[in-house]
Length: 387
Image (cartoon, rainbow, N blue to C red):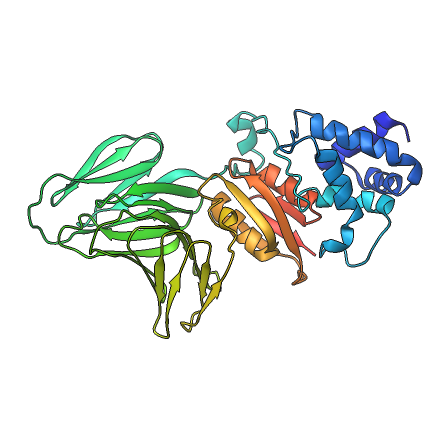
């Protein structure tokens, strides 16, 4: 096959533009030994293009071929296959091999033109609803800034860029007043509590907390997922209630995920020390460890947690490392506010690895999943996952 034709088919495959006939022709071409040079040239072209710039070093090409030659190490491929035949699957394992492709932002059509054909699905952003002690609500986003309200001896201000801050202005005794910050699906938000503790809330999460800690325990309640950087105050431990778990700290950084649709509550410690308490046991944690708590209160401690993966959401991307497919889809669904439907039984051993910017369009995410041999399609605001 002529190199230009091969490269064109590869490019159109990545864009999901091939007809059934062209797709079959492309697959047959990949299986032919004489197309090895064209395959290498096409991969080089993709990695060097502006449409899919690679974010790896000079060893990118070698890493691709290493991945091709080690197919047996990936659960999707259950038997050893010749390297040249594995080339047909190499696109699908670029991501699991650690070759992360970051699509450029898609060119946007005018909103009026898109609305007539399908709903617009945008990546999540900074948005939340603040509920004050009297029940009144304030809608927050990235654009607002300035004073919002006063609760007792505390001023509440919004800082530009999706951040809320509580600032105590006096030591006057006042009864505790509780506020809550609700982040919807497709949102995220950061809050600085009155004691100086910083909290990052992920999509579909709620934090309930006192406006001032002057006459209240440093105890907050969490639903969903949050990352905490706790301000150290001598003699005043900080506590987080989530599901049936109480996490107690003095001054530390940690992440808690306690979504109702997840099977466990997971606490991951980055710095300092914490205690995870349930009705059944108290578990002390140290940096780099993770604790998973079952609904019955049983807690299991895990060494050498993948901290980068745990806090990836806070840093602006998805990071998956041998993640089961349902877990991948739940994260995507919460961030893009879409539904996920499974059209058939998905193999339990099916895993995914990759790094995707959370600023990517949903179309780019679908394309990246397809590159990893995950059969998905987007219909309106629903992702259909096929075996």
